[in-house]
Amino acid sequence: MKTLEQIGNELVGYDPLALNADLVGNFLDQLVEPVTETEDVGIFAALGRVLAADIISPVSVPPHDNSAMDGYTFDGAQLRPGSALTLKVVGTALAGKGWGGVVSAGECVRIMTGAIMPTGLNTVVPQELVTIADDWVTVPANILKPGDNRRFQGEDLMRGQPALQKGELLTPAALGLVASLGIKTVPVLRRLKVAYFSTGDEILSLGEPPREGAVYDSNRYTVFGLLTRLGCEVIDLGVVRDQSEALEAAFVQAALQADAIITSGGVSVGEADYTKAMMKKLGDVAFWKIAMRPGRPMAVGHISREKLASSPYIASASSYIHNSKQAQHTHDNGSTSTTGNAVLFGLPGNPVAVMVTFLAFVRPALLRMMGCTASAPPLLKAQTTEAIRKKPGRTEYQRGVVSTAADGTLQVKSTGNQGSGVLSSMVQANGLIVLHHAQGNVAVGDAVDVMMFNGVI
Ligand code: AMP
Ligand code: MG
Image 1 (cartoon, rainbow, N blue to C red):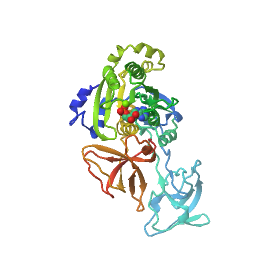
Image 2 (cartoon, rainbow, N blue to C red):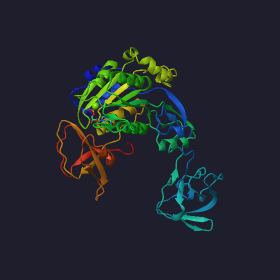
Image 3 (cartoon, rainbow, N blue to C red):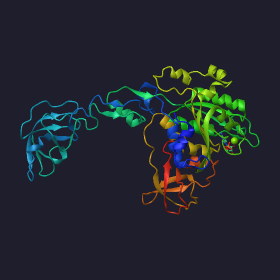
Image 4 (spheres, rainbow, N blue to C red):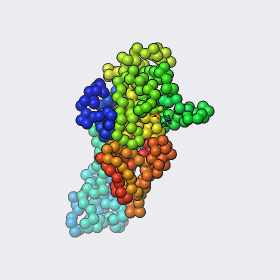
């Protein structure tokens, strides 16, 4: 595992105090590693999990050449350009009940969609195209080529080929594909454990009476939702006071149980230094100022096992943590144990900044930790319906509502107030307008990139 210093030194243009948002993903890619422990689960339990090994198809799908149409099947070699072809019907092939007879030249078999092609036959004429007289059908001239309307054995999947690959996220379509092969259980990577807590003395937990200057903790719930949608196991540690002992206990407890720790608040300049000081004390952590809006400050790194070992909270934390990572790792088949070495994402406190930094940086890093190899969904292009002021030199993520314009193209409108505390803008929006680092002002009708939420939020 590389240290933060090594990663930073190797990254061209890395400046932690004015960090180009485009470099963050690259940095985090090197900071995090995929989990290695696997388990076998039934198909129903596999939804949203990451496949731990290729699924090799034990069968061909479809298992036989079959008809794509209801019609008549015959040997297509008899077709002559410019001539109709009249054939005698000698039998019927149904789906699930084939026809085993021998078919000679000048003969055909009535066939249903999905029925196995009788031996020696390769062409199907749809029933609506023929004329029928008693046991005879006539195929009009020039409407078919040999091989038409036949589905090949294995055209969906060929036996022995990978049907799904290691690292794929198991979607509803993937579950169906697994089932189509007759497979009941699949190997998946273990779920990622992510601990989360909010920091700040002004943050109220639900149930506490309101008090002047204090706000209810919303980040706890947005982060819970984002992590749950991602398929992570969430370890919710609530609100932690700006106080060394409480923070140390929370970090120790989180690091012993989780692969990753997400905090919100306490990392901006001018904060009481407790959160930052504790991150420094227990880990190898970089404090970034990212050239972006919203979400400038962010801390990333590792809580280190060595530093954790000397914490007075380790004994008390271990005693009440069940099913901890330590327990997990006794089943670990030789992979590098990360016990106590949790990855840390210290997010800013502002509710929109939390969501944006999560979507832009934390989510892709967590997917990598989950072992998922899928590339990020592409940004879409939409025409902005209003001018947007934008300074070059920082990346901006504006909340937008994307819709279809009268001409069928995509258009996007900002949700209005883009303040980093305006959480209602995230509720109204269906995507983020991504204004890139070097980009300047945007005029009405310009195409901008949008990152759609698509069920992620
Ligand atoms: P900070 O990054 O700690 O300076 O916080 C920035 C702003 O976000 C402040 O107005 C905080 O009150 C607010 N904030 C911090 N944490 C939370 C939270 N968990 N829920 C709602 N608002 C928060
Ligand atoms: Mg604060």
